[in-house]
View 1: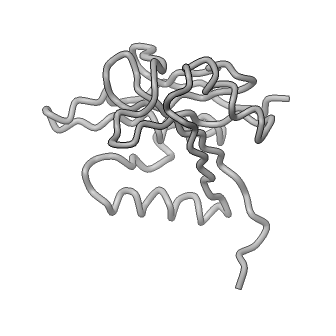
View 2: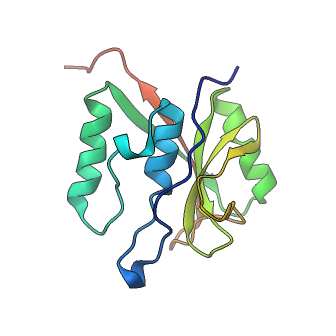
Length: 147
């Protein structure tokens, strides 16, 4: 059963040379929470305070992000199926897009069910980091914080 999620496109296409940082992650968060993209802080703008803002935004709602790294040597198809081993809930899925940057889509049942990219850039491989991985991310609610 897929929870009620929204399907919205991101506002900014990633172009750091022009001082524009893509907002696919905040858009995916908003979609999973059934919110408007603009209700969620933009996390990537080269300013660490923005990352703190998203943590505060989630924590104020009793929410947290659980991340699981998926080996980068797997094919995209196999990597997309990995989150089904851990949860039957939709999750954010990070990898390299057709535009050559790291990108976030929403995955459920081994399929991309929503791509917030303005160009439907998709996922073509693992992240373009020093240690390439795919990353599955779930937004979860903890009933209470431990002392």
